[in-house]
Length: 297
Image 1 (cartoon, rainbow, N blue to C red):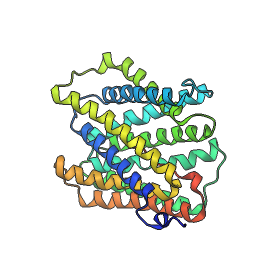
Image 2: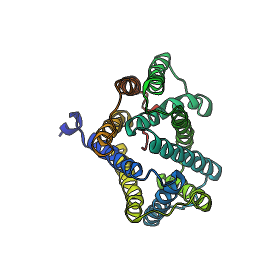
Image 3: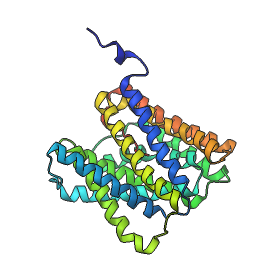
Image 4: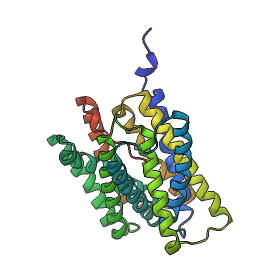
């Protein structure tokens, strides 16, 4: 019998992706609740608890946690942790929706870097979509009074590091257990955070301890749901749901953080999201699913 559910717009995979993005958005909201906690301290707690979750999962799967591509795994951890640190810094100093929007530039860097790392081609239509997204960032930086140029650049740098990390992940596709790749990212972040703690440590108050734990928990839930979404359907079909994170960021910012986005900020956000969704739609229509990148924010 034909699976009718796969023809619906809200397929199971699409629903998993919506829930995954919501989980990451909730984690980001708790980070916004801790503006005084250094970003590297947040990275440490998120990655330390994430490492525990990965070790448990690997033990159940029987996979070798060390992996076979040690250098690539190290670099994936380095660039992934750098991206996470810079994204958290941006998130703490910019309106939530704008910070998340800039993070969604990472597929652009993924595609451009793939030209050199994986010898892939970017067709001319993609450059139009990428330009549209960068125009949106320029609008946010220029006309949003709450967008500090320093943190706009930090967010772009985070997206670049994310693009490098994702290309490294793709280079190991099929040869490393997914949990091994995630473990090395989490482990690198936990170690880097531990080294940084003596220099940046600020003792959390009572409720902030709970927030730090919830950041790790909801991030892990988001990762699990993301994996389920990608296992159920092709990435090109569910990745568009990932951009719901911008909508979650807008709603959370207004309801919980009293953020009132400026008109031009909304225009810039619309340009970025429009450019990236158009790029994803083009990929889906042209069968270029391998170039789709799902951002974990």
